[in-house]
Amino acid sequence: MLTFENSWPYDKMMDDIYINECPFCHKSNVLTAFSEEKLNSAKEGIKQLLVMPCCHSKLTILNADDDYFWTEEKLR
Image 1 (cartoon, helix red, strand yellow):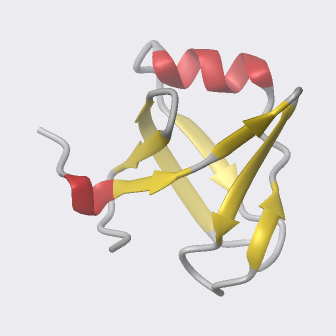
Image 2 (spheres, rainbow, N blue to C red; image 1 turned 90 degrees about the vertical axis):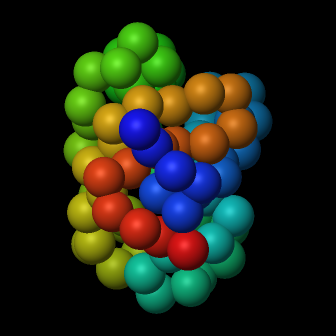
Image 3 (cartoon, rainbow, N blue to C red; image 1 turned 45 degrees about the vertical axis):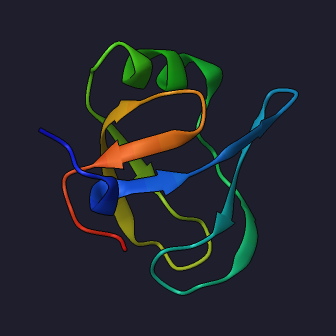
């Protein structure tokens, strides 16, 4: 079971997906290259890889909902 410690919030504006703050380098308002198709796959429970453009760290997203990415590592 995924815990809240393994979640990270995101925002969707039009077709762009933003991370309010990078969990690795703490840069704010990061525009990701995560597509709508990848987001929909994540919402279906298909693993997706998100490479943060600010620091090139990798997040393996196990699941997503309308507000959070759920990952395999503790981010909080």
